Image (cartoon, rainbow, N blue to C red; front, side):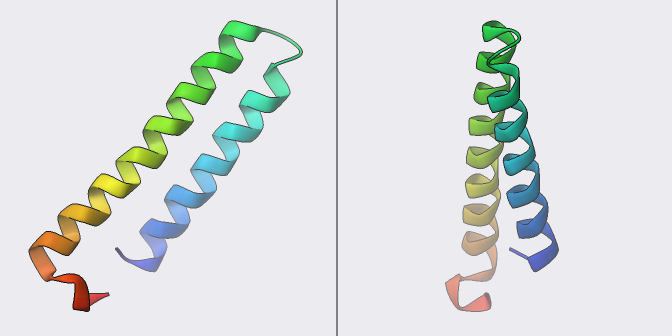
Length: 61
């Protein structure tokens, strides 16, 4: 996975988890939704990395 794409997934996951943490005191359902979206975002990053490694081979990183 390229460095830019890795940075995107890392920063978007941090943003989503931070927003979930802030929203805990305001709305629990919103915090739960943001947490689930953050976990899906992290999982999507791993899926993309695995697909790129399968196509290019692990030594391409």
